Length: 467
Image (cartoon, rainbow, N blue to C red; front, top):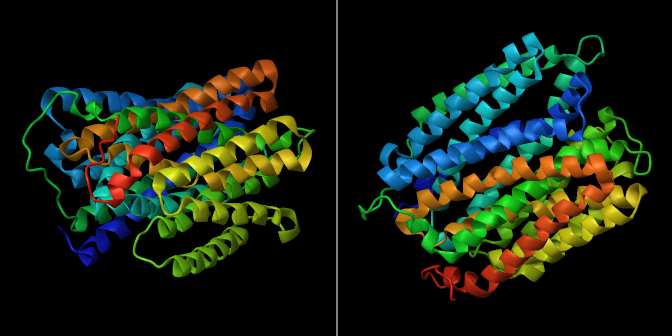
């Protein structure tokens, strides 16, 4: 087994990767209202942005899974490092495709660029998430993945503010809406992906191989926690993306906040920033090397520090965002009640989001606004915890299981589109019932794993659950 110190440099390197793909993913929430205005799209048509981007995860993962079935796990063959490098190259190509899309001002080409970008991210998700889980002991995997996902959330927090400024203001043609405002930003993003690839190519990453030479088959699906986790990822990504995609439009409604896009992008940043707060706290809460008292102190300090970081990024006054402190306190209470158990914490956070969504649906004004934004901080640990609980104990099937979980990111394509169709018929507020259903399933998955998985992780035993 690798020593902790030898894993530090690879973990730092991969953290920069998580940051970048979080940034680009969150940029979709800026593109949606921008392209909706540019091409005069309805809710359903505008959600094709997410459908193509996250649909690529499904297509890419299906291809990966088919290869793993007939030929064995591709990542085991080419290595995690080469898988990451290939993913970065495809992601860069996707970014560069925004240039001809903007030059021709064709919505279809924008969708092709987003699909290509999603294919690159598919490989990154399969390789990098599993790799981070392997960089240490299994019982600390959720803590480690929450840490890297925290920097992913840092990217999603900055993107609405920085990306929104670049596309909606800096590169806009004299304040008018134009396709060309996306050209330079995405050329820069593509260049960063290539640069990141060059850095990762030079860094020495430890190799993980399996002593078991068995290949092919559907071995990963014999684990009940994985089968349930596939739906968990589907509903989590679907719910989170659907909410984030509609926040700017939601806040623009007269009965909510009547807020223009230039201002609401800051509250979108707060939604994604909440996930950053929760993930950094989660990395501390779900670790097993600290005394409870120390852990609580570190969690409080981290929570305040990250909030101040977010406050320095967004262009709003403290008087406008102080209600968010209520959700920070509730988040800390949730972690305390979660008792450092990944599944128990997941279950509690899902319950909170169900309540917040119900309030956002049935109330108006700032109560509905803050309830929807507050969901972000409780989304924080969901992906990491669902992922690590799902692949716990899979051994030689980890790569195949990871590809199935990434395939389930299809939820980010399907749920927003269905919600867009519902919003066209029922109105946006009532359409939020769909993400509420998503969190109901996540609560079930968290409860199932709480009763069947966590104990085996803590005891260092096989994670196959009881029946």
